Length: 271
Image 1 (cartoon, one colour):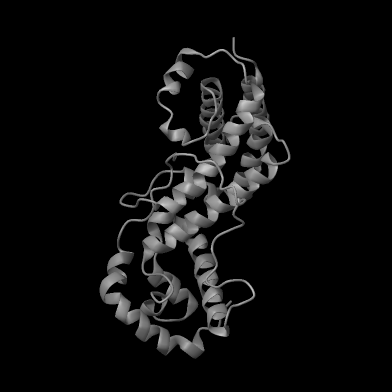
Image 2 (cartoon, rainbow, N blue to C red; image 1 turned 90 degrees about the horizontal axis):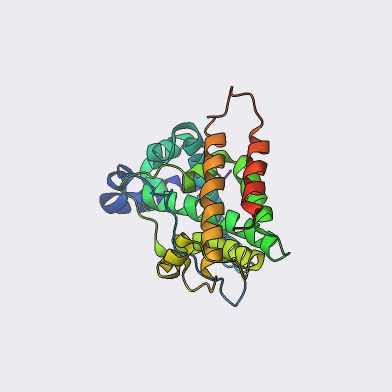
């Protein structure tokens, strides 16, 4: 953890200046709308991103920049604990400051308000999942393989999953850079589905998607692959969300086997 004692007064002054504009008033605002599917885009030709942007370029950070990155990381650690305990809507920079032993305004030097902090958490979550899915995709994983990556990632940290795929927090809209990261996940699924059934006949809904494919961005997937990808996405997220929320508890069956059965059913070629 970062030692805040040596800079608390300086940070408090800097935070107090911001506090008049984006301090407790911003902290009172609602948090992030996250459970929304976004338009996928193909990945940049320059290669996949490797994680959330750092506060300083690797290898060129000054001691002050390294300290800033350390404090921001500690703030996010406390934020994740709050999300796990009470949900994103209860996130409070003032509460985090109390846990870190500094004044509330001091933290506004690192995050302008709660919305900015939630955006950072969402960015980290989407970046983590997008990288995990893409790592499997580049090895040739089919849609079933990508589905297993999704489930493993979600089970590793259910609160992180629910932050981006759970109930939206009113009043917040993720910036374009965040929706761009989430779209990478769908782009990899579209690519995998295109390879699965390149010549599959179009269903009535697939025919509809041929003229309603804005959500797919500029991905060249044929209509049948669009339908397959949406079916995978909706059915598997449905099972996974119910499992993580505990709705299968006490029902006497293994949710992992249900998830596998759904994958098997989705593997069946369309008539």
